[in-house]
Length: 110
Length: 112
Image (cartoon, rainbow over all chains, first blue to last red; front, side, top):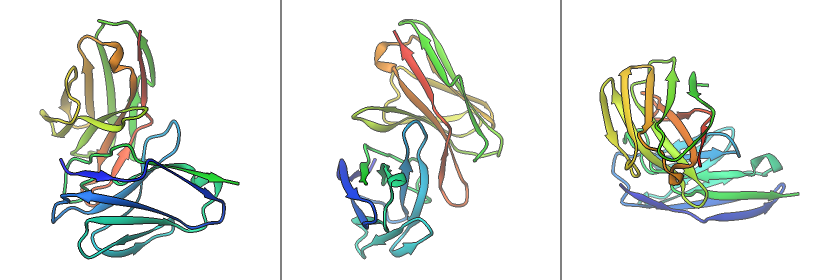
């Protein structure tokens, strides 16, 4: 299965923009890039998905360069409630197995 | 909410005993998954199913078996539980159109 690499942890102050980058090893041509968020004692939940260029929804933006070897999740003006673990699993709409890895633990500081 | 129910939510058992975790869904999703989550290891895929009686192994399938006799139920069985299987187990279903996974609330298993 393809692997992804992302920072283990990040800290940010409230109100700042946070960018979390994920590198995708051997992402398949037809795989979408997805990001999930997980709060303590809960299962992960979907945040955003894209194939290339930029995607924006009410929660975040996702930037994907032309070579699709990486992606950046951008969270605008984070609050304490954004403290969570963020995953960029391989696979997506083009794959039936998602490999999550360890994710990035984001801590938002008052 | 994708109508996913995991049971039991908490279980404490002893080494060597069999354990079955159940995942029940109400929205007729074809794909279902079992993951385990441990500190330092993130979320790891154990087994998944792509239809009734159709299952396949994930990254960490040793010591686990699964069964899917009905669309709505996906069972994870530990034939002889070991302490290394102490973990939080998450069930998930896959949306056919978007590929998005919806997760259950998790089942915390402690093997003494």
